[in-house]
Amino acid sequence: MDYIDGREHGGDYILDGLRHFDLETILCCGQAFRWRKTGDHTYTGTAFGLCRSITQKGDRLTLHGVSQTEFDAIWLDYFDLARSYGDLKKTFNRHQHLREAIAYCPGIRVLRQDAWEALCTFILSQNNNIPRITGLVERLCANFGRPIPGGFTFPEPERLAGLSPQDLDPVRCGFRAPYIIAAARAVTEGQIDIRAIRTLPFDQALSALQTIHGVGPKVAHCALLFGFGRTECLPVDVWMRRALDAWFPDGLPEELLPVAGIAQQYLFHYARTGRVL
Image 1 (cartoon, helix red, strand yellow):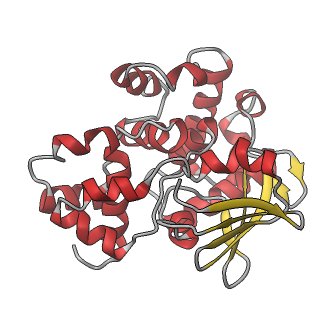
Image 2: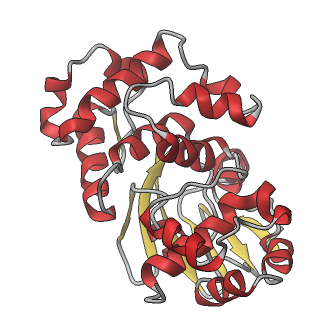
């Protein structure tokens, strides 16, 4: 565990002695699009049908309105807190450019989001930037999700499968609209078994997602990494292509392959925001 103590206190859940964790970097590094800054140290967002505010001050994380039961069921896994990033960094630090990336953004973690939501949000991410993706996701949820205290749920595939691409006009997602509908129908009609993909051999899981109209290798890799917990995935966009060409022209070392997706997130954020490429 990358924290010393976790406990309920006054209706909140508090983690003390938190290490290898920076809330702002985690939520703003291009892997999730449903969080907004609502205070100097606080972000508010929706995951797994719950809208919550989370505050980090130093090595203390406060999850507002969260019980022990809810933390164990959702947030422990969501923030990948059962994994020791300290141990991962010992391996990553053997490699110069990963060592530099970790020094630049030491608090990154890879979220483990809802699989269906991750698939859709990364379909929407195609040829897009983070602020625009965030707006698309907000409009999709506001128009087709269920209202909950503080916001809206992510629309279920059954809600979207019966729509036409034109029904998504309020989302303003353009050419991506048919892809969202195709993904929803693939899930509801049984072409894609969301649960099975978590345990399928990697090549089969990747191929299965790419049977969906509009889902190519990059979207499939992102969905598998951020939604299915498949850390062997290596999404490659323009920034990662630059990073790999410059720093790992022969590919990632073999010892990194089982956690290539986590290494990728350090490198991606460093390359995109560190002004090094």
